[in-house]
Image (cartoon, rainbow, N blue to C red; front, side, top):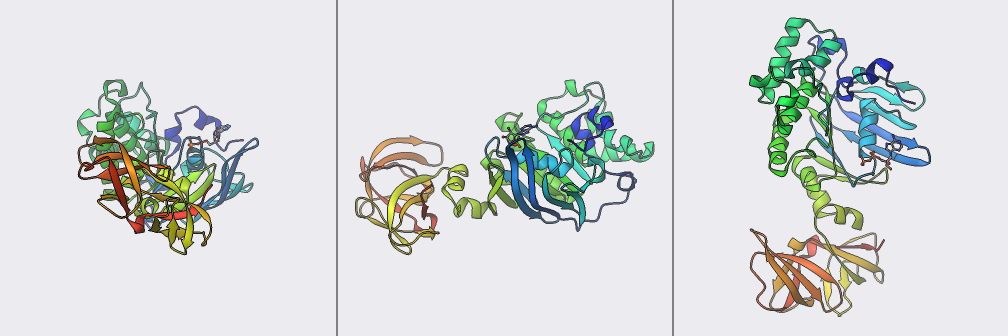
Length: 378
Ligand code: ADP
């Protein structure tokens, strides 16, 4: 069952994400808005697409839901938008309960949200200005006010001179900027972004990401951003939630998620990561099979435990002596660093990023202790 009405089903889904008439009529939504997601569950048959997710979003913050395809990011975003129901838990936006399983489910237009989708979802038969005006028209905002706001929103995304074009006459990047203008035109208190850069080529993606960041900061918008792209998440977010199978695995700043992943899953998913086997020899020391020892940050492990030691390629320095030894199997210059693959004598293969090429085929590894950590192998 969905909360979407028949009338809403008849229009593209982005346009359902608008504001109520009171807001659209010119009263700015209070900026002390925060989002609270508490134990939200969404099941499709036997599958829990979202399985007890809880988090808060603070006013003006950019929170990213990051995870591989199928982990429940989009479902959670749809539940926030009100275009999908929840089977358990509660969602509050701006201090108001917008969804409480089985009891409350405010329709999208009463949630004060703007939404941008990967597919742009523009009306092809409407000019840019009419597409952007659509949420205001639905909210019955006067024509004078509508015109003023459309001009302002199009200028905010640097598209003022393309107002009279049709979407088919625009590039992908321009279409996505129209979609962004439409999402912000009704002055939403919360912006929901569902993989908005995925359809754009690499160069355009960077430009559009900067554009989204600028608009979000200029307007002090609270934003929840969904992506499977770790670089995008690290670059854009104040905080990241890493998801797996409908659950939140870790929540933290980009620096925390990258520098101190709480599980091998997060370490693997966010950034390149090496993994070698060892045994805890002290509360903060790991012994490798060749007898060498490394200091590390231990997570939920005790001396004697068999562990996976994980560290970034940038945490390795190629040393002349000391440290585990290995054989260089390849070295490729990437522009700013060499990517060096090394087979350790203890059996594992690791990747190092080195500013200088390896001096020979036999190397020692100096692994930066603060970036290494151990944890029960999964
Ligand atoms: P993501 O956005 O992280 O790729 P989704 O939220 O789209 O993940 O999907 C999460 C899980 O829920 C997947 O297993 C997916 O197959 C399932 N799912 C999503 N939407 C539906 C639906 N309408 N009906 C049945 N299963 C769905």
